[in-house]
Length: 94
Image 1 (spheres, rainbow, N blue to C red):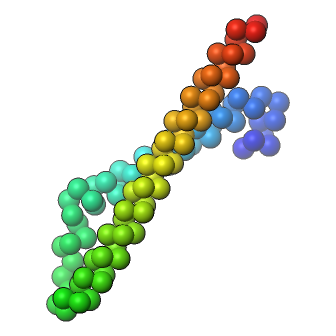
Image 2: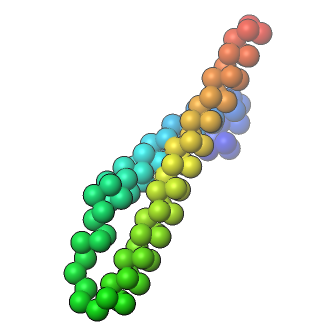
């Protein structure tokens, strides 16, 4: 993306920020739903040890994916703020 926008690097910050926000939301929304409804605990496995292992692993992975989505969204927001600061600084010079 940066190679495409070499003449105007501010546009790269804008597009990377928008892409980060959208992809972060697309990852966070389903993970948040699964976490809020405790969907994973509804699995039916008869052996308690296997149930605990599988549900524990899936909950750990869900937490990691939720954190990754939140961090991606936050990074996108920071890139958009950086774009705004660069745009404001450039418009004052003109």
